[in-house]
Length: 449
Image (cartoon, rainbow, N blue to C red; front, side, top):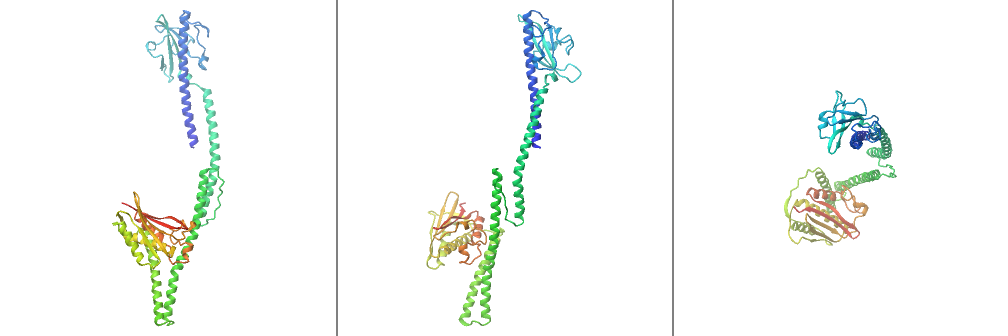
């Protein structure tokens, strides 16, 4: 439809341009012919031209203007009376109107009869010694002057050729582009039904189609990995919650059945309390995560000195640790007040310190506070073995726990994802700055103000 409308518009404006150009060119030729005829009449000394064509003083041939018909040519004296004409009958009759003669316009558009035909009249003076002794007047209808059948035929052939060529190009391009798009649409339905094993050819030569197919395949592969990971993580969460329940049930059953007594029974109860505390912590993490995910936890943003805040959190954490683990801190050279929820920021820092402790077992953790023009940064760095490259893209996924961690430490895998959500709620962020075999650095960014 766009092609047809475009070609129709091109044909219309092209035909209009051809008509106007032809009309203008033929009027210019009429001007040249009338002037030339006036000059030849003066050279012969006869006001009445000879009847022969192509001889001095004779009427010009119509083929000069490429016309099918012959225009009317009049030789009139200074009063407008027709002395001679190339055809016995014409629109002007035997007398040229006085208004036409007196007008300063060389070319005039006239409406001479009761019909709707317009005429173009061109006149040239016959002057002898600067005295006008007569006029050469040439007149022809606008229809005849604008008639260009051959050009319109060529234009029609050109438009039809362009339409066929354009339709062919559109057809083949559409077939070529629609096939991979249909394949992607079919693959999308397959993914919607839960089948991520799709097969899409990558032999498309169009860059956009190739990128579409490649991106869709990568998306499907990632969805498949995430679905597999989700199943595995849910199983891990179930196991982590079931383990303390099983342990508490067994210990309490032993005490209840008097299998143990005295100090041993007291020890069993203490173990049950510790397991209960761990399970309570995991349930609280789940509730906190769900609350933040639903934006249901309001933040208490206050102005706080970032140096004092970080120093107090690190100090309290160091006090609660066993020997062999210590966190050192580098603060800003000058104090800086920022808006922050102090309790939530403490929660993020402590979680990162605990993760660093699990990575190094013993050694030193570095906490560095820095800033730039817009943000304040808190970096927590350890010298542990680092996070494998293949796991780095998933560390902020809910319930995710790395291969090296899931068998050594209990937990739900919500710490990093919850910490990131808290940081973003404070209009900041938490991200992995770098990780290698030399150690890992996590960065908390907070707006300065």
